[in-house]
Image (cartoon, rainbow, N blue to C red; front, side):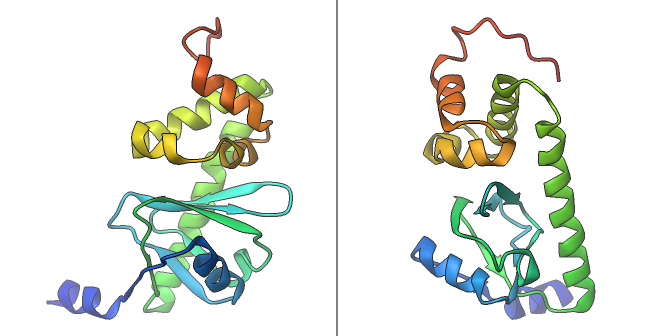
Length: 164
């Protein structure tokens, strides 16, 4: 019964436009990426981007400086109902940031581009990855958009061995 009442209280927030999401995040209000869906949000900061996946906190002090957002999958955001839910969402946001950081530790730009594409492809599938802009992936791992484009379109032709 608790789960049923929780899902009724956790109002899903639908956004017809990316600008609506941006406005919500810039307001400083805390939201959570719905952990019951394969979805997320790429959040553009001034010089980089961050990915907030299922269960991650968005908005609040994390994202008052965001400039653009790109929804990934069928984005669904919910309001956290308790302090415990907020705390858990903060920790999950840190985990998503750490995962991306591990990819950026690789000094080879082509490999970073390939690894971020592989991560998203494995989690979200090729159809969703194909819809996402090269610039978003590039900002996530610190490469040029052309590097991501090259890996997307010529990965099978490049003689690159990626060790994961």
